[in-house]
Image 1 (cartoon, rainbow, N blue to C red):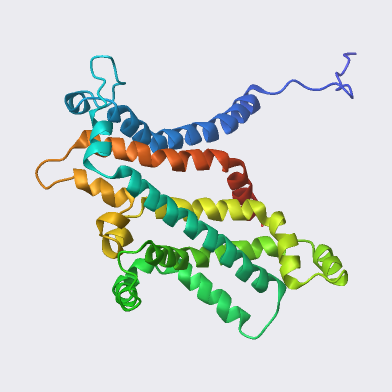
Image 2 (image 1 turned 45 degrees about the vertical axis):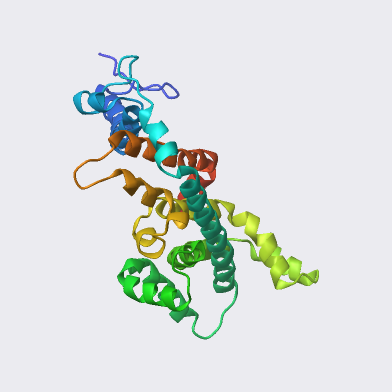
Length: 294
């Protein structure tokens, strides 16, 4: 009589080859997709930086090659600082960007706290109004904005740019931060009110708890403003209030373009944004993941 083999309890069965292959593929495929996306997203930036340190002939003959001692050329950077007031353009962009981000975070967080904390007539209308502000591009109202800036005597002034960019960034900031403020424990706010804290104090206590959302909104607000050309070209065409992107147009002509200078300007302009993104990357990722979970 033949013995019938029975599985022994407590002994793990060896995984099947098909299951192992599928498990490895399930891990490898997302990583390959992310790597391909990184190459596509960072490839143009790497090309700009590499070609900024090469001669004009090397840029057109070997655009994908790294700079070598024979092709190394810093003439573009010299042109930027001698033919244009790059330091002034950089300072203007920095002032506009930082001022706008501060105003968007301050005003947006206060409005989001009010929408998340209080119930009043018309709260649904206000929320829908903010959502409409996200969906409709502000550039559609360029003519009206220009007319308003002329009436307020804010053309060729950095204050005009700051106001326009603040209006552009507030809808998204209020919409996103409202969800973050709703996740703040109500017991914390009630305890502060029982202790006699004012509403401004309660807001100040809740603000650190939504720090990931503030970081995400800050990055989302900062990048489009720094790279924008539309409103600086329309509202601040004057020499003393030009931004970095508008100053780059000095090296682009109808028939002849100084590509060494253009690539040098783009390289210098990208450094602050890369540095700030690296500094706040952890908070930015936490803000994205928190928003996805909520």
